[in-house]
Image (cartoon, rainbow, N blue to C red; front, side):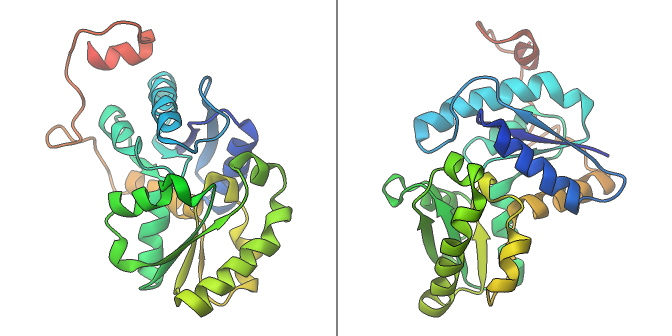
Length: 245
């Protein structure tokens, strides 16, 4: 199968990290490629940036999806994943949903290890959107941006281990979720240093996408994820406009 990892921000190095991990964990017959948004922001930290990134994501999927069998949305944001599922006639898996669902399989109490700041409440929004509040032990935040973590993962690993151990001893976490595309590739290095499972959302998203393809998944023609109908539109790229014609 042909799998596309679609990065809705403009940091190509982040796309490269995800593609590298995807190729390490995928089945031998799976081809993994990446796409980086052509407009927008370098990393997504606010609701307004998410709105811009959502447009960039849908525009990119409209132009590239025909060459693939499944899509992974390469961002730990869930706000635009449902829109991509509605628009795209392929299985679409988001990093947040893959990581959090996997964490529920391997433990009762989950800690998110994220980036950015608590003040924006982005991870809290994800917890509400995915309805996993009853399973949350804590949210622990690294004082780094996504681009800083991408540029030097090694700089953050010691701090991640510290946060992970605190989550286990103080918050009684059963599983740790690395909440961001910039963490791609780190789980296998961190796992031996921590006493509970470390979840790489990208790895589990790859497995879910492969399972959907192998099981004969088909696009919904009814229900809340059916494709949008025809509607007058203006200013969209020709590829994106086709979904509304």
